[in-house]
Image 1: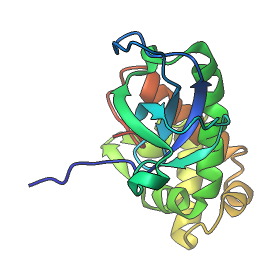
Image 2: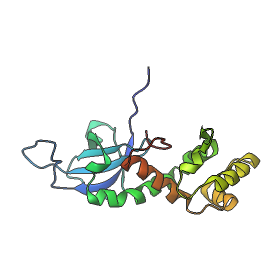
Image 3: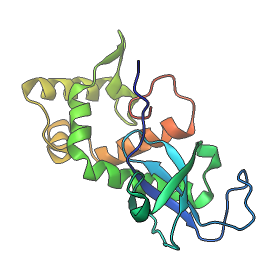
Image 4: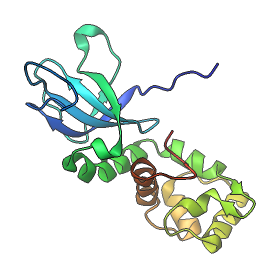
Length: 183
């Protein structure tokens, strides 16, 4: 039986201190936030407790003891449900998540493989075609990449964090045949 995936931490994309989501009926408006999960990149609506104010880009735990709880997950949402503010903040928050989880993403880069006999996973990343894919594979065969900086130096690809963030945003916002990062 497959274990249900859940996020342990979320990053705030937008915070509304007097705005209840339209699809939740409440007598009084409740503070809520829109966020992106750290591990699976689930988009979430969160109820905020205790009159706390949350900052854009703040990392919050989703599961903690009742008396220490900052937020509760109201629901998973789709990209279309995000506010304009949340959509505008998404890429920068994703870059921050990627930076803080560098070894996780470097591990993914080191283990990417063929999707079909003619399509490599690297080619799904913006700006990386067959020639750059060949260079990445050659460099990876010499030795595994240890950091984003080393990856960029050895392959000639610049801004790999932004490229990954853009791919995650695409996977969240549009229907993709192949997904690399979003579950």
